[in-house]
Amino acid sequence: MEQVVLDKLIAETKRYKVDLRLDASFDKLTTFGTGGKIAVALFPDTERKLVKTIRLIDRLGVKYVLLGRGSNVLASDDPFDGVAVVTTKLNRFVIRRKTAVAQCGVSTVALASALAMQGLGGGEFLACLPATVGGATVGNAGCFGQDVKGIARSVTVLKNGQVRRLKAVDCRFAKRDSVFKHSDMTVLSVKFALQPSTEEAVRKRIAEMRAQKAASQPLEYRSAGCVLFHDSVALSRLIDEMGFKGYRVGGAEVSTKHAGFVVNIDKSTSLDIYLIIRRLRRALLDRYGITAKTEVRLINFKEEKNDLFAERKE
Ligand SMILES: Cc1cc2nc3c(=O)[nH]c(=O)nc-3n(C[C@H](O)[C@H](O)[C@H](O)COP(=O)(O)OP(=O)(O)OC[C@H]3O[C@@H](n4cnc5c(N)ncnc54)[C@H](O)[C@@H]3O)c2cc1C
Image 1 (cartoon, helix red, strand yellow):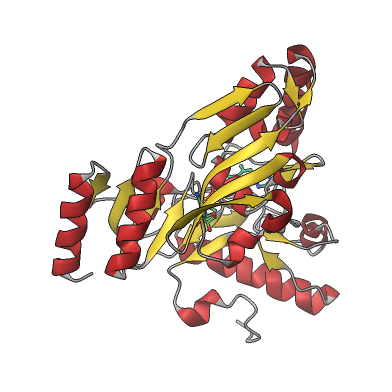
Image 2 (cartoon, rainbow, N blue to C red):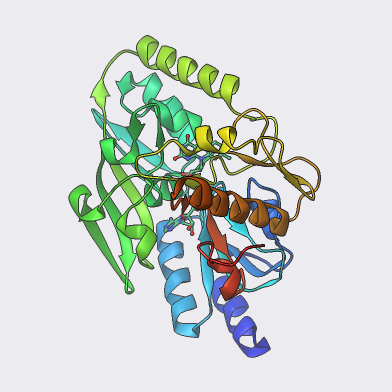
């Protein structure tokens, strides 16, 4: 980033009091715990500051990436000469009757817990995601038959510099997908509609879900959950069938507990993880003719590496 641009960024964000760091790196901001240095990381703590930040970045023509908890991203090991806008300080939400409105950086676990206290059901799955509301909405995250699509009523976004509200139907939620994955909109906040239940029932459901996750997933290691998905096929079973459990590159491994997970078991680099994902995709295509989609978002990989569909053999 040119010094003159950096200076402007520093001066402006200082003026409206946005926390700015010049020593951030993706390994500290992602659940994989891998990835290179980031030129600038910004941590706005109000919606107004987030809007101003994005408008400023747009005006300066700087490349940027939004980050929630970083639990669905793989950032390359190379330095990122741009800005990471981290939303985790936007952590306010309001629950009124059967609805909740949450800012994009709200922890899904914290929201699930508050919904439980109010005896509101339908959002129990949120307790199982190490995520923010914004990140979960972008990927229509879900598990155990629940997902964001099932409870989101509207999403307030910043689009082309303007704040707008999208109805759920306009968010085009689909399996691990939404309109936000294919645009540069910023999710500012989300309104959810829940079902009346009891605190006891909601807590019981959360405990059951968590127990199931703990029994079947390698939660003791750093990961980003399942790395690949397919609209209609359970890929982890096929990956297991091909004998990939325990397949290792450098410090990364296909989990021996859940074949859908790639885990950072010993100071893995992002490249190690990337090579495993590519190998799995290739094998699924060769053996079953299945084109798996990459669930994690790749950040700052060189163009040719970004293409996990690349036909070449390793
Ligand atoms: C142990 C483990 C278990 C998991 N289990 C599941 C599961 O059961 N089901 C499931 O669906 N996922 C699961 N995941 C994956 C992950 O937690 C979810 O995809 C989660 O919703 C990502 O949220 P995040 O806040 O971490 O987003 P990030 O990883 O920070 O970001 C994800 C994407 O959203 C974008 N983004 C983030 N915030 C915004 C915003 N405000 N506006 C616009 N774009 C934004 C980012 O740029 C990026 O492209 C799991 C991950 C782990 C580590």
